[in-house]
Image: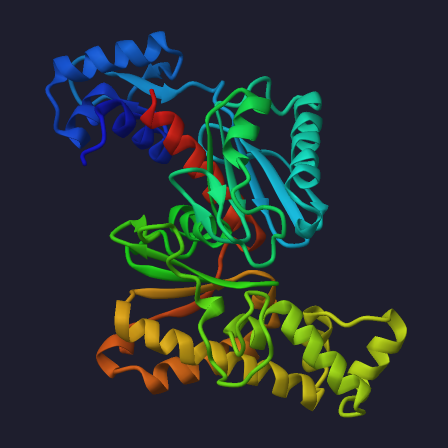
Length: 389
């Protein structure tokens, strides 16, 4: 379905900055009279304003139009163990940001209370007076249509909880809720390394594993919103039990928790002096410890990363053959494992997929890092607001 003229105008101004009426009419291929009428309506609604004269093109100089500087969008990127919140301006650049540890397993009300408290803190500090819209990413399957999580494996108590309804009521603005990897894909496609391609896969490696499928310039969510849930594809026939209840899932083999589990087992079995030392010092091991030990030359840590990369590469090789993307982007906390992980994934993907599919297939690390999700959530929020304008 074609988007309305107001939406198209607002998106152009968001992405390109101030444009003249002539430039807008040329880009949108609409009659000037219709454009002027729409701009007058958007000006009355305080969505756009005049921004001085445009550069001369000969004859009378046109006036530039820009988005209202009053626009503020909220972005909430919820992970299993932390939340990042941003307030952005009209161009989706951050005005203020805050990050805090949370435990998604503590349930929706305590976690969303933290979200509201952090947003109120940013408001008190002057980041915004009123949000125009709020975008939220959750670390589990989400019904995009209904704005609720659906049977999320690592989020006990969240199934069917009215996240969108609650936050819309508390912050008095439109709210959009999506899966965390989808918002990361949207962010990377809007302002990251994938901004020049329409068809790409964004793989999030964190506590969980997921894949944002970006096709034709849009996220493909599937009929019920669970497309791309590669973390629960089986990679080992009789592997470890996954949070979803099945065995041998990719996430159970190579998620952040899985890597920490295997590193701890290796340390206790005496297979790695480096990991044993870190375990004795801190009492626990994380994926970060494995990465640091690998960087220092620990063979066991290197082997753990390579084994995980091979499992991930096998899944991605199947997706490459099925989807034929222009790019694969890897993000999330485990992307910090560095070149050893990337090299192993590339070797498997390029080795198992047909040359036609991989001959011109970049496989790269996210350019935005931890900001990918927040930028994607802010874009979703602005899209929602602009469609309603």
